[in-house]
Amino acid sequence: MRTTYHVVVIGGGSTGAALVHDLVLRGFKVTLVERGELTSGTAGRHHGLLHSGGRYAVNDQESAIECIEENIILRKIAPGSFEENDGLFVAITDEDVAYLDKFLAGCETCHIPTRVLTAAQVKRLEPHINPQVKLAVQVPDATMDCWRLPMRFFATAKHNGADIRPYNEVIGMLITAGTVTGVRVRSHVTGQEYDLKADIVVNATGAWAEKVSEMAHARVPVKPTPGVMVAVRGRWCNMVINRLNKPSDGDIIVPQRGLSVIGTTSWTVEDPDRLGLPEDHVRRMFEKGGELIPAVKHAPMRAAWAAARPLIAEGGAQEGRELPRTFKCFDHKVRDGIEGLVTISGGKGTTMRAMAEATANVVCDKLGLDIPCRTKEVVLLPYWAYYQ
Amino acid sequence: MNQHGRFGPTRPITLKILRYKPGFIDPPRYDTFQVQADPLMTVLDALEEIKATADSTLLYRHSCHHASCGTCGMKVNGREQLACVARLVDEGTDEVVVEPLGSAPLVADLVVDMTPFALHMAPSGMALVRDSEFMPEAERPAGVERYTRYEDCIECNICLSACPVANTNPGFIGPAGLAAAYRALVTGERPAAEVFAYVDHDDGVWRCHSAMECSAVCPSDVQPGHKIMALRRELVAYKVKRFFKRG
Ligand SMILES: Cc1cc2nc3c(=O)[nH]c(=O)nc-3n(C[C@H](O)[C@H](O)[C@H](O)COP(=O)(O)OP(=O)(O)OC[C@H]3O[C@@H](n4cnc5c(N)ncnc54)[C@H](O)[C@@H]3O)c2cc1C
Ligand code: SF4
Image (cartoon, rainbow over all chains, first blue to last red; front, top):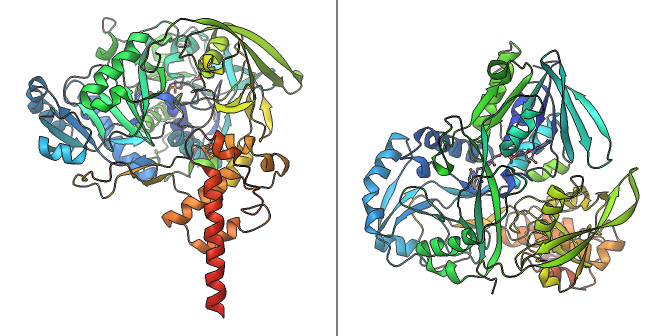
């Protein structure tokens, strides 16, 4: 089925990637504009964990269920894209051990498969683990390549007819009588400005969502909430190593290629373009990471950087990690009386496909269409097909 | 020491950046910007700061910020590097010149077109994921048949930019594509006959002059030059074997 409707998607992160893929499969004419390189916002530089959901199984079960479902789907539609070595939640202290029952109960509720391992077993699997380890729980975590996974969605969407325009920044909205009818774009390649007409505009700019929605005088309660990550040389584990406890700083080590990436921290900023890199956060990654795998404390640093979570602060009072991790799709007709504009924000790299499905459903509803989503079944093209 | 996250004192550094936007900033020119660099500030950090505070139209490629995606290859003081791990103060100069890679068509500012590179890489047949050789003594958990990891090559195009042969022969597969073909051969990802058909011609494995610039600049320990030599040896052995089989 081919519709004559044109949807403009703003933002070429993982959410935008999955969304253009979904929309072209449903027959829409789609144009995506991204101000920089594709995935140059948060999506390309996150921690690289394909979540099993274990991290959220106690405090945020809605997110945990989304994660395990999408974890399974992504492995199916993007085969050969992950380091599929599973993950461990390791208990180092007695306090960690005390968290075990809650953790296992949460995982069971969310249908996350677990296997409890003794200290001796853990040491045989991961020789560099802190020798104080008391026990661990195996879960289906994996490592993702934050550039190449979204690129598979972009590649497939492009081959299905999507017009994908990196280096094109939205600098304004076209508004006629309370309806968004398109966007004003500046090409950073030619320096020229142009208008792009649309039946629906989707704001998929993550931590920038508030900035962009303000162009249409619409409001989105997104708080840019950065975190610091540190990559050290050497692959000090093959599995993803998480701390068996409430989410906190530096409690995950994601191995990737020949590196080990320690993350992360959490604070809030006003401007997603000015995150900075707090020195104490960088040092804390070595300290906290060292509690899981002592060797990372002395491993040479390859890189330290920050990325901004687009967390939804609907409730107002919540801070940092307390903010819910699930995504929200805002129809600005309902929220602000502005027609033609939808915002999708929040979520995770792991849930990119589900976020796109929910958003494309809203787009269909707004246009009075009933077209089923096909992204759970369609196997994605290789990432390099983007250039063919 | 900045090795473990200590930032230390800052010093002013001038970045001299090549600017080009077809039909707009044309011919190319250099713009200069100043930043206060601490010992950890990378070229990419500086570009991000300049973009956020001084010139929002500055264009460069970047994604992962930790030397794993391969998008931010550029020339820093004339040498091909990943901007995300090239530390400004390590350059040792008060002015740091930043230019696009030389091996691919220029799109704008520091952005080059990766299409020709991808077209040389894709047919190599190398898979993204390989067996992990780290900690061979480690046992595997139930359900994990083999420990895997991503291939080293991050497809940054840096080796082609540094390769004297690739710069004068646009048809040359180039170090990264040949190294990838070697990986596809040794992992058995692709039948030997197909790999050799891909590399055994004038623009393939025989074009390389063993300048080894590629191995010197590769930021991801691929050692492409050494892999090209190994590929040649495999190819010769394969031909000899085939010759005697025929006879
Ligand atoms: C520290 C940290 C660690 C994380 N770790 C993980 C993890 O391990 N696993 C996981 O699954 N998730 C992780 N996440 C979450 C995940 O990274 C994000 O939820 C996800 O990447 C968001 O993608 P997005 O496409 O919504 O946003 P983004 O990737 O930020 O995309 C928005 C895009 O919009 C563009 N844009 C902004 N303004 C404009 C404009 N005016 N015109 C055009 N384009 C514009 C930006 O350049 C950007 O590319 C982590 C997040 C953080 C912060
Ligand atoms: S071989 Fe090395 S330099 Fe060449 S593209 Fe791959 S990672 Fe980059």
